[in-house]
Length: 130
Image (cartoon, rainbow, N blue to C red):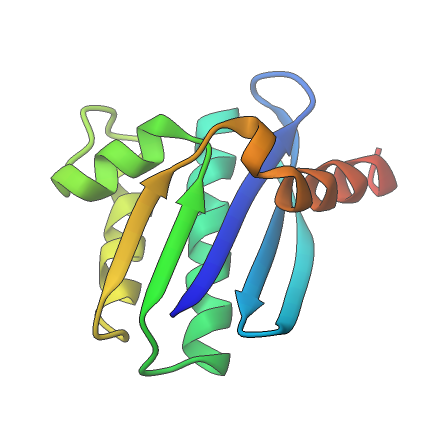
């Protein structure tokens, strides 16, 4: 099972946003970050998962994924396959579509303190682009 940690950093809400993804594959660790532009914090959290799934689709096709995210709204939306906020609906649909590339994708909400690697990646990327 591949462990995938995602996070977003936003300066303002909405404001400049970046994402960080940290992946544990056995003893190997993969990490990347990306600047997104101007988004709300919640939108950026959805984009972090989308970028992570895109990366995993290219690099770990056919693997079981455990995605750990500190955004309750993302985890709840994916679990319910529904979002009350119409802004998040297309982002959720992208996630649900990308999930189909894997036999199983599990989402787990984790507290901020368990997401330090992804958090640091997102914050560093945001600072580089300020």
